[in-house]
Image (cartoon, rainbow, N blue to C red; front, side, top):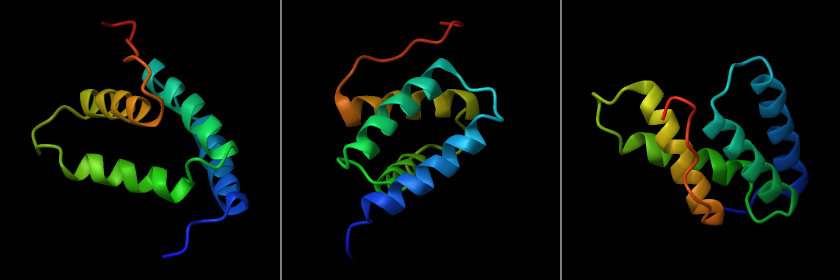
Length: 93
């Protein structure tokens, strides 16, 4: 399969960011958005690759996991995968 173009990836990412503005996001989610934005801008990650990573992560989760905890953990997992940065902590932690 041919890699998604930079332009298409940036357009889809912009749509995702526009949708995210309407949500109350966690600190982890904000940190992930920052990392993914940089990666998509420099074309080291495409929107399709990002979505595939989310799907792969969610697929391996146990069915009884708390959804809020799953999202927090997924964000940290992807941040580490994309740039090796340290885990982001919520204000609740």
